[in-house]
Length: 105
Image 1: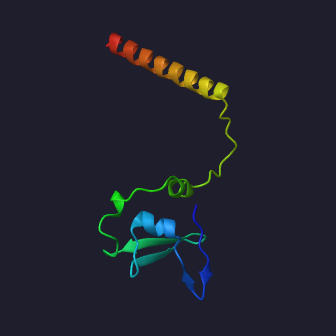
Image 2: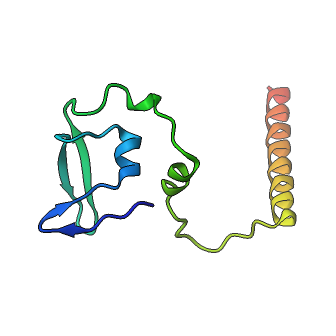
Image 3: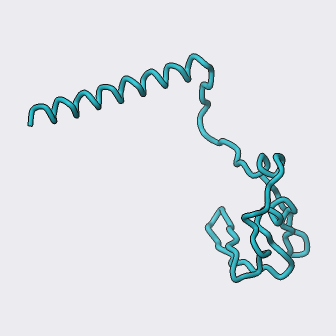
């Protein structure tokens, strides 16, 4: 996640974010006060021609992934296989119920 600091009332948006969104000097933002969260929403047509066509570097992509802030998760091979098996059994049981309901009609 990119970070920014305020100095003299101005915040510099990190270069990786500016590049990813095609921001240029003069880009305007709406400031949304959400209590503990302040969001910027781009206003108008102050973006570069087509920022969606710009390719990110691997590092820019990784920097944009938010950090997981939830409970610990077991990602061991065994836990993943158990979860897949449980899901497959649940799907099979659901399909059997549907088949039996259709058959009884």
